[in-house]
Image 1: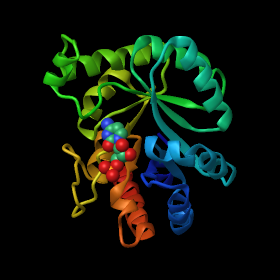
Image 2: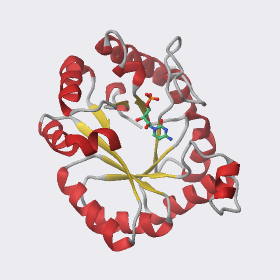
Image 3: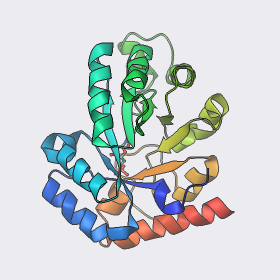
Image 4: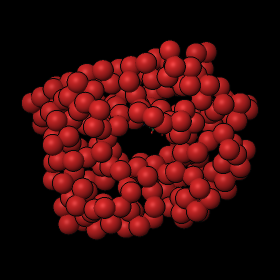
Length: 234
Ligand code: C5P
C-alpha cells in the first residue's frame, strides 16, 4: 500500500460536542488528515461537522456500524455516500453488507465490515444464540465480506495476520486498540503499538485517547506518524 504515513493515522473524535471537536481539529491542524466520527459525536451534530471537515479537505470515517433491513441500509448508505465520507462501518451480516455495497455504488465511499465486536467473547456469542466461537465467526464473516465486495475490515491488530490470509491485499485492514509505548491502556484489552500494528500489516490505525487526551495532541499525533513512517521503512 503506497499511502503516505500521515494518511494512515485516523484520529477518533470521541468528544461530546462539535465545539470540542472543532477545537481539537484546529489544534491538530495539518498533523491529522483523517478523522473518525462515532455514535457520540454523530448524534450531537457530528454529521454536519463531517461535511464541513470534508469541505476543508479532511477525510472522514463514519463509524456508524449500520445494520437493518436491506432496503433501509441501501438508502442510508446512499445518503452517506453523498456526504463525501471515505469510510463507513456496517455489521458483517451478509444481507447488510450486500445492501451497503448496492448503496455505495460508484461513489468514493469505502465500506468497512465489523466482523465480531471486540467486547464479545465466546460466552457472549453463545448467549446471543451463535454456535461458532469468536475466531470462527470472525473468519467466516471476513470471507463473506470479501466475496460480497466490501472494501475492508475493522479488526484488532492481533487479528491482522490471520485476516490478511483470508482477504489478501484486496481489502484494507483498519485497527483500533493502538497505544504508543508508555501511554495509558484505558479499557482496551488487546493493544499494540503503532510499530507492531504496521509491521503486522495494518493499513490504517485508529487512535483516540492517546491523541485526544494528550497534553499536546499535535505532538502526540506527529510522534505516531513518525512511528508509522519508520515501521513502514523497516
Ligand atoms: O481511545 P481509543 O484509542 O481506545 O479509541 C479507539 C476508537 O476505536 C474508539 O472510537 C472506539 O470506539 C473504536 N473501536 C474500538 N474497537 C473496535 C472498534 C472501534 O476501539 N473494535
